[in-house]
Image (cartoon, rainbow, N blue to C red; front, side, top):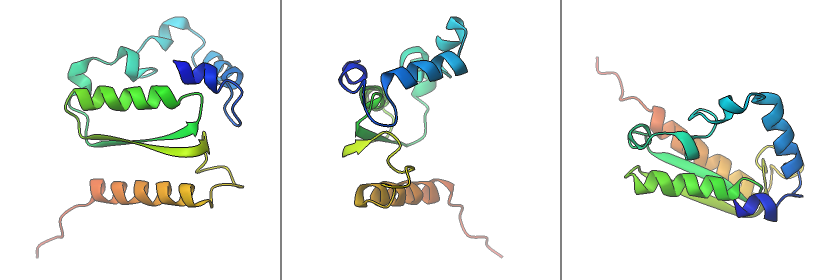
Length: 128
C-alpha cells in the first residue's frame, strides 16, 4: 500500500523495522498468508461479517495507516459497525511512546478506547 512507501522512514516504525519484525515473528512464508497474520487480505467475508462493533485507531504518519483504513472500509462494506479514527500528525504507537503519550491526541484516543471497552464489557447490574 502507498503508506508503506510514503512512510518508509517514519519514526518508531520504519519499513525496514516492520520487515525485520515480519521475518522474526513469521519466518515461514506460509504463516504470513493466514487470516490471523493478515485479516485484511486473508480473512473470509463470512468471518469478518460477524465481527463485533470495531473501532480502528490509525496514526497519520505510519507505515501501516493505509492497511488500517482499508481494513475498516472492508468491515464497513460487510455491514460491521466499524469506525476508523485517524490521529493527524501522529506516528505509530503515539499512545505508548513516553515523550508524546501525554499529548492531547494520545489522551483523547486512550480515553475513547477506554470508554468503548467499558461499554463492550459492561454487564447489566445484578438483580437481587
